[in-house]
Image 1 (spheres, rainbow, N blue to C red):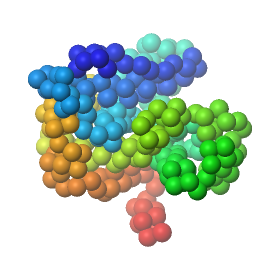
Image 2 (tube, rainbow, N blue to C red; image 1 turned 30 degrees about the horizontal axis):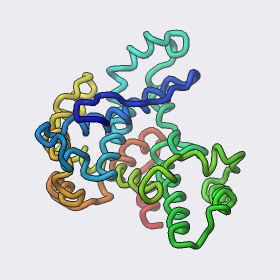
Image 3 (cartoon, rainbow, N blue to C red; image 1 turned 180 degrees about the vertical axis):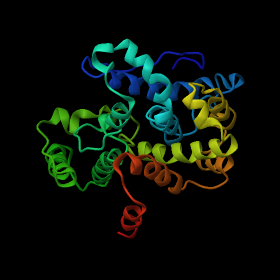
Length: 275
């Protein structure tokens, strides 16, 4: 961005999948809302940025997934997208569309991954990046090691490097590597922030079903956006939620969303936690 008033975002478009552009745009709008919500008197100072990449990603993932892939969001917006694409979606009921945009399956591309397998993509990258930084593997061997590790973790072969190690520009875009761990931190924090917002304003889920986002956005602006980088990420999380970073809200969010979609019983969660 060039200033706090720079409202431009980038997205991506695939002609055969409208959801690709839709969720990419929601993701980038989450980043933009954060930046535009920073106090204007911070303009030109070191405070006029998000406090950390992890907190920044929490906002993009919150709007993309917790809001944008929710049943309530589509109860309001699905008739509109059906009207825009009558041939493709006119006869597809919401009960089919909503599970389809939340389908869990193994995939080659991180940015296309569903919410449950997404963090596996991050774990692979984090492990390889750490090995690179510690000198345990050489860059020249990275493509081969990627293919071996990916097939071991995901159970599917990598057909080429374009859909393998070269799919992320992040490897060389940051000061030190790609910092892929911020995406998982963002996922965890998105649920922690959202749960806190709903606790403060229980009407937020009903608002979303009515296509109304003002309460959620203003809560985020007041508690997170406006502060820019005034606080460290750890300070901000505890200040906003009353506790340090914790995994529990994220695990609750995933279970409460995907258990009904896949007909899972509580015993399945208990067994998984024991393992």
